[in-house]
Amino acid sequence: METRAELIQKWLLYSLVSLFFLAVQSLLLAKIRIFSLTPFLLPLIPAIVGSLEQNAQALGFSVGFGILCDAALLGAFPCFYLLSSVLVVLLAVFVSRRVLTKGMLCSFITSFAALLLTNTINAAAVFFAGGAALHELLLRVLGASLVSLFPVFFMHPLYAFLYRRLHMYD
Image 1 (cartoon, rainbow, N blue to C red):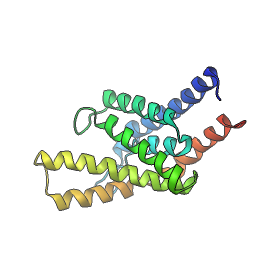
Image 2 (cartoon, helix red, strand yellow):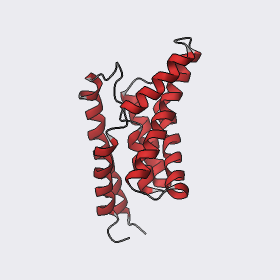
Image 3 (cartoon, rainbow, N blue to C red):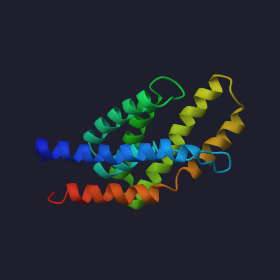
Image 4 (cartoon, rainbow, N blue to C red):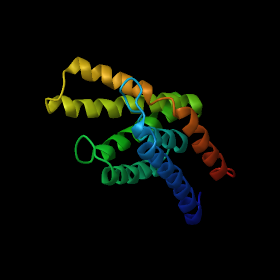
């Protein structure tokens, strides 16, 4: 059982690392184009945290993260990031508890699923708004998910280091 101070320290550290990756997304990755697609880190954050923590606290983190992203960024519709981050963390917790053990492979698979889920929700919003043809959107979902997957190899070790440090005596 964690004390209140340990809980505050844990989620403050996770939040600071997440803000760092949010800054990387906004200041660096937003200007990079790979096959006319921009890498997108935001779904990876709740996926990695959810796959490591595996508890209701990760869901609370994803709600806060989604609200922060909705306030700071423009989504496909209101509360887009809140909805997608909650669904992502639920998926990540399920996969890491029932399918795979937590680790790099679990983070990689949950991150890919998170990217597919978030990009599909975004594509559905565009499709129903009459923005593009369905086959173009599906190709874009797959391409954007693949382009955005590479940063997992940098993000997971940092979150895993924090997880090991914060759960040293568990």
